[in-house]
Length: 306
Image (cartoon, rainbow, N blue to C red; front, side):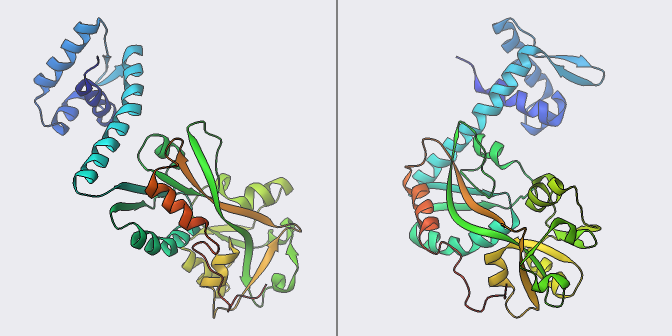
């Protein structure tokens, strides 16, 4: 059976770029670490890496074991943390990752209800919008992924929990404010305010502008949806946001929501879960809360006019 320690060393060498740095990170001497890896190589009759200038280059066997380490070690780390939670009297730990800014607003409304319902579950949220959420979920870095863009991955199961429409947000005096819907050419002279992700991950581009071979005159990004709404209210540009968020966060601002295209762009917030974990009580409990009528987003009666 393979020892785990050499796999840990491989991970650190690949991450830090040298045996010296890996030894320092693992709090052992370089000679001790080199001896450990040399004995491993002798036992299995392989070489794990070769010198490449001042750096190292993994052999085919080294690459194979590194890939194994990257799959297995996060799962063992996850199991160890879960056992630690059991030892503390908790049922487990739920780490939620998010791939979209509006999802943060949605989750912030659901979290208090979940914490009250599951006081014995450790709960954590990763709000890194640029990270690869699917890879993090498959690799056991998180336990649930909140995303509007589910993918077909054999190891994962995605559950739709909340439907919404993406709308164009404009100032109430904007020429489009009275339009039934906007067309791609209507954005040619506009400054579009978006969240800070690539155009390939923005539906306004992939489902609306790019197919029509159009693009806005200018594009800028804003780190928060609150700032996006304030910029639009100040006539600094137009934006695209979920209809429910505009209704809730745009109250009192001089804004109008306009349908994107004649048929609109409709989306759903999904919860991604590793297959086989759907029946875990505290995970199923989160999904149940999210899917209840009204979900985490109840429409505000003082809605921004369409």
